[in-house]
Amino acid sequence: MRMRQLPVLLAGLGLSFSVLAAPAAATGDKWDLPVHTRKLDNGLTVIVTEDHSSPTVGVSVVYHVGMRLEPKNRTGFAHLFEHLMFQGTPNAPKGVFDKTITGGGGRNNGSTRADFTNYIETAPASSLEPILWLEADRMKTLDFNKETLKNQQDVVKEEIRVNVKNQPYGGFMWIDIGQHAFQKWENNHDGYGSFEDLENASLEDVRAFHRDYYGPNNAVLAIAGDVTPAQGFALAQKYFGGIPARPVPKGGDFSEPLNKVEKRIEQSDALAQVPALAAAWKMPERGSPDQAPMAVLGELLAGGDASVLYQGLVKGRELALNTDVLFGLTSPWEFDGPTLFTVYAMYKPTTNADTILNAMDEEIARIVTNGVDDATLKRVKTRMLADWNNGLESFISRADTLARLQTLWGDANVVNKIPGWIEGVSSKDIQRAASIYLVKNNRTVIDRKPVAKTAAAGAQSAPAVGAQTKPAAGAQK
Image (tube, rainbow, N blue to C red; front, side):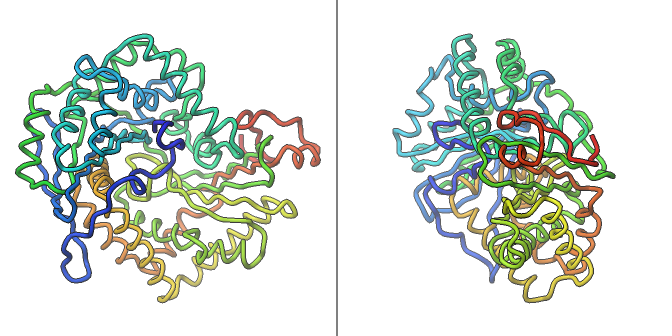
């Protein structure tokens, strides 16, 4: 994600800076988005969802490439390339893209995840054609030059300094945890990238990456808002139809089984004031019957102040200061390879990681044994459904969600299926998911301690934030 607009790679997209639109007409209590899909002859999938409640549009172009597909010895390259996409083309030099969109009252951004890179815009409907021209233009080619490459390498390195190296906890709950939980390089390397790998990226690397992964047949274009399907498809054909398809490298097998031995890692943090813990379990694969139960279970456990872990660890036992939950770098619905369900908590210096983990295990065991009562399950589902629908109100998020789901599932209509999947989860489903996935042997734990506490415990001198780690006593290396 470009640092000048949203500084954190993990930040949500589009919910604060786009024009909100009223929900489309619903049938009963269920809100079904109109989803119209067409594939152009060059392989570009186009999605249009019509809503005339606001004279604005949201646009998303999602490419099926992310950190999992970046070249070895080029960690952070997919993210670096995302930055380069805003540095101009032979037809639209640097600055034209942003000025054209913001000058018309719009906003734009982009981000990189494990399985996709997305580029998003929102603007008055009158700006739709210029936006599509700009997106098609940079799909064709970029202005590849050494000066721009060096500049953006430095920008990404500064982003890493700001968001990781000079931040308390340094993103250990979403960067470091995967390096220990996964076995395959594609799944476990740092997607932000090492400075050495970033500096070694060449112009030829950049050209090859654009050639291989940024063709129309590896992309989805979604348009939401004040546009009809006929208009949207005609404009997509006008601006993208002449771009030839390009061969896309075949992806590898990224699948991994559940872990069989718990992994425990202890880290030192020179900037943290209190210790923190991240516990991560491998998720069921996308499309599994256990995916929706795990999504509901995650909300039940750590979704806000009413959640089981907040009430049990923060309010009840008064061990933790907070609790939070992550599903990789996206959501429980948007991944195309191994991902993690991670619970993160800062905890009181008067306790320790074992006590926190034992308390978590007790709460999970209670769910496995007793299930979830009807009132609690209804409350959790209601919150999830409200969050899902609220996330679709802005046209920019609506377009982006459709493009992501089409890219990952091959079916943008999943947007209308997810509410039913949530509603269909039973207490028995949650018990089953908890008993299979939230077990000790499938868990990876990082205990992040302030330097002073680590030193007081007789540990070695602390490394720089985000640097070396060492297995905790008795842990697997």
